[in-house]
Image 1 (cartoon, rainbow, N blue to C red):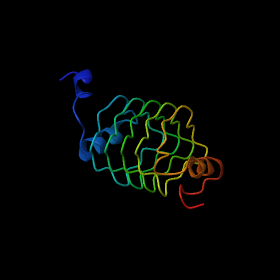
Image 2 (cartoon, helix red, strand yellow):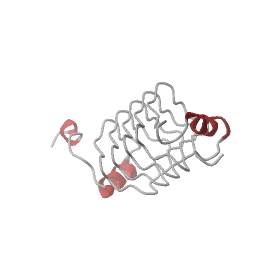
Image 3 (cartoon, rainbow, N blue to C red):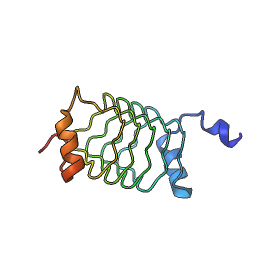
Length: 134
């Protein structure tokens, strides 16, 4: 199977961990509906990856490149996005309570403001407090 055809297959938790053991590059991958609790994605290139409906509770995305990523309806409770680049990311309907967005770039990101007030999200970006616990 070619490298490009691999990107069309939805990856499992085991496959994600195998890729992470080899490289920090998960660009343009389909990782929908996966249970990825507590995985360390720090410093990873995740541009264009589809994490829709995935359980990413307590994951670390510190310094990760998440430009254009889909986190639509993902569980991000307790996730750490310190210094992450979330520009153009889709976080609509994502569960962000308890997440940390300290110094994250959220420019043009679709935020779940119907679930969490925008002020709580911005407070986390500015101070590093957990979303929804200010």
